[in-house]
Image 1 (tube, rainbow, N blue to C red):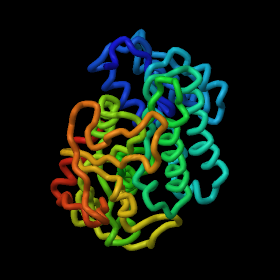
Image 2 (cartoon, rainbow, N blue to C red):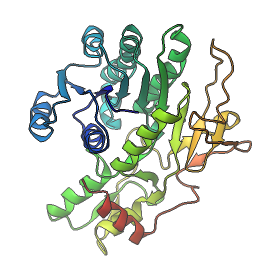
Image 3 (tube, rainbow, N blue to C red):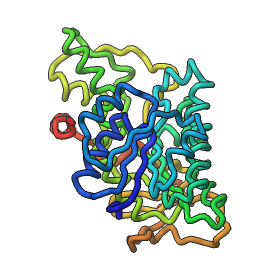
Length: 333
């Protein structure tokens, strides 16, 4: 599907972008693979790491619509990974978060339509479901924009979908490297926000594979959600530092005890497939009804029951301490 195609990834110099590029180059022969981001140092480093002739690097911000339109000329597929993601930073800098996560989403949509891009997938987060913090609220707004963009497409071939998943093991700013840094600095105990806290847990490789597969599955308008395990924060601490004491510091601004990926209020729109869920759009598109229980690969889903909720605290699949330790070791990149 990606051979001889031009692919652009916004925020492409981040951890997701690097893994995505490695996997695309390992399995496909794209015509162009374009990294679009505003971090010149990371792009400089990536140019030494990824030397395939198909690689292109565009310095630019998703806030800059004209630059995005320029960068997406001749592009077939877009992965929108650029975002302001730090929960606390967003709480203290709300306008900056809105400009990147909401206005940036509008600009990606406009650029895709201006250049007749074939397919766009936007990365979302579990924090967009029943959000209590600004980051989650902006990503929910972004999700709604990308879903509704399918109705704006008109005669364009462009179709838009969203992928939503949980905490990525080892990503920048996440709890795993934070704990590891404290241990390396000689900490005598690890800070725990609340011993009841749970999170969905996924590796970068799993996240990238899920995105790649959903380019094939999508009709346009779906929110794709993988079936992944949960971890308890206390088990994560034990997996990283067996026997090390912990101390409770309390929940930080905008933080939840548990995360949700399929809210109960969307249960009437949610379909369960073998390894994922799909939340269908709340709106009807101009091109008629789409059966979201049957994807473009022919995989059949079933409607979930009333009030179904995919919740990190009630997830039927929890990692044990040993499973967490083994998974974290395998997920290192």
